[in-house]
Amino acid sequence: MLYKPIEDYAVIGDTHSTALIARDGSVDWLCWPRHDSPALFLALLDDDKGGSCRIAFEGLRSTSRRYLPETNVLETTFVTETGSARLVDVMPVNPPTPEPEEGPDGEGESRLVRLLTCLDGHVAGRFTVRPTFDYARCDGIPIADGATVLFEAGKQRLRVNAAPEPSLDGAIAESRFALGAGETAYLVLTHGEDGERAAIDDFAGAESRAEATIDYWRRWSDRCTYHGPYRDAVLRSALCLKLLTYSPTGAIVAAATAGLPEAVPGNRNYDYRFTWMRDATFTVTAFVMLGYVREASEFLRFLREADGSFGRDTKLLYGIAEAMPPEEELDHLSGWRDVGPPLVGNAAEGQDQHDIYGELIRALCVFLEAVDYDPPEKVNDRLPEVLDNLTRRAIACRDAADDGIWELRTGPRQQLHTKAMLWVALNDAARIGRNIEGVAPEKIETWERIAAEIRADYLEKAWNEERQAFTGAYGSHHLDAAVLRAALFGAIDPSDPRLRKTLAAIEDELGVGDLIYRYRMDDGLAGDEGTFTACAFWRVGCLALDGRTGEAKAAFERLLARGNDVGLFAEMIDPKTGEQRGNTPQGFSHMALINAALRLQDTIGRFGLPEEGCAAVKAAAE
Image (cartoon, rainbow, N blue to C red; front, side, top):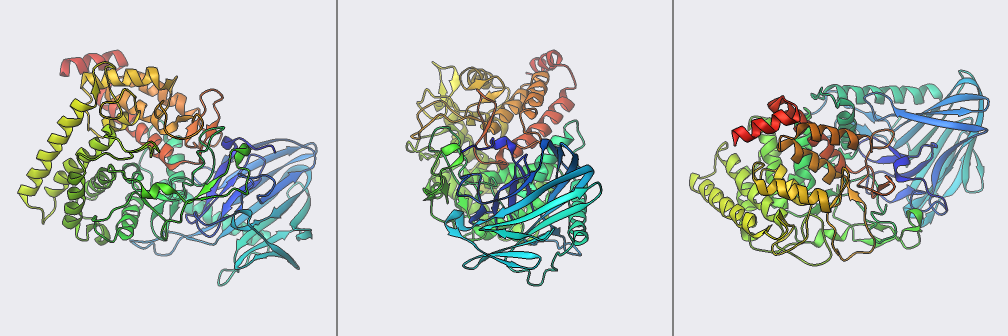
């Protein structure tokens, strides 16, 4: 089977679920009604067994595509031997009026609308729809009913409305079109029954849904406060993060897909449609710094509601609306490029990763400062108790080994990144405690004292004199790009000459040009993974902190060029081929992009000099 490159895919969505659409216009991944629901289109993971919604033209010569400016609405242009046509793909979003202070800012319809217009000459072709419910474990029974086709599979239903009217060809719904200049066709997919939602039964109705959604996205984009030189890339990343939200709860999934491989060949085919506590810091920071305080607040609302223990039992990983499902192999599917089996669910839920306390407290700190310590009730509720519980847990595990940020399968270690995040937890808790009521001064002093002890410990024990670098774990010789992230959090002083040596060592051993591997050691898994996209953006941040702004700027711009044609990044990049690897689009990659752009703007603004001048100023300051 021939599989499209991962970078071939663009994403659309309605803040409830997402669809991945290839350059050829085929919808090859769609989960309804939620991000984490079983896929009913998954040609992405098995081109034979997995369903799709495709468009095919007679005499096709070329395609091109873009997002309509400042939206998550995809426009694809097809050029044939006889004419050209434009396809607009949108998942409708209906904002409530007035917008509530808390809760969803848009209601989804579990619909996908496809609007086709002939631009010139004449075009002919067809739409085809073949759903394969429950990850292709359940075939839908199609029923033709006038202008619609209904697929039923147990309690699952998918309705197809189209003009020209669809017909059945076995298990496939088909709508054939032949259009002259200015003529139109459309296809609408609706999950479940329409219920109280108004049916879409003509092009005008479909077009009005698209126009309302375009308006929603543009009003959302207008709120972005970043107007720097990389606005297009930053805003696209922000729009991507917004797509990855599940607005009913405020959750954000790590990626839109499951099962796409990080290594080819290999067995790293995980499901990322859940919420990692680790994403809290960069998510909240990215949204706050771009002016999207409401989105940051919604994510914190989710975390507070998901953890009803007020920090006593905070977990690494959460389902977006329900408990985490168990990890499961879909061994009936071939997997992308036959790298299988794909996995759904995620067993990392059971790991010990102690950095999460620093992740959550830093997210709270950034948000509270953005709202001048006047947060919504849900975030403010019993905040001193939350701080007390989280810091107690951070202190209790200060000497404990854990599985760490990369979720290795080789056993717990004493990891620098984890220890650094424990320092962040206590340091930021003290920062918050000075600005809210209910935290005793002696408690703040204790947090600061233990934070200083932890920092002194990891700065000594993670430094490897032989390697002349901070290594990933105490007593280890292996380098780890997560050390760069610790530096970005301030857990290692940017002026520490050992950090500069560590960055040079990471560039030499883990770097391939501007790309950076997470690590290069046995991790208990098969195959060689690609470079980790977020790590490359962390390097940009560290270069900027070191005053090497010219080098950082050049590297950042080269990295931006590695996104796909619509500015999206998966989890990893294969340094040999430049192809993207892993689940896509990856929230962590886009969070890192945003934060790198903001840090670059800040450091250039502070130094305001070419690279040589910056180094001179920095040396004088030291």
